[in-house]
Image (cartoon, rainbow, N blue to C red; front, side, top):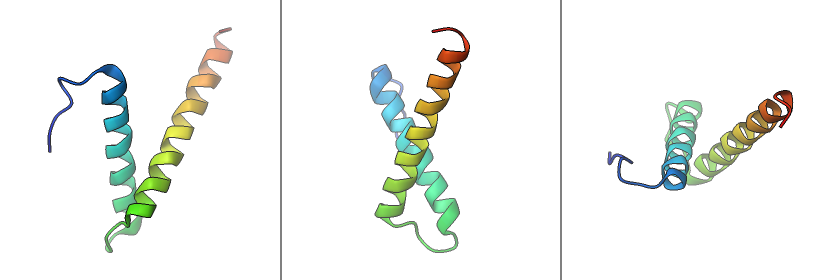
Length: 63
């Protein structure tokens, strides 16, 4: 697996989201293979969750 050391911040975040989504989808589908559709949905859900947490923290901190 290639690292993300040389990538920009946004590219790193996108790659991390993709990897986390794929890992979660594999875990959910086990012992079967995770379909590309499941990986896509789980990745989108993870992204939405992270965005919601960031927004909640900003609001809590008065920002």
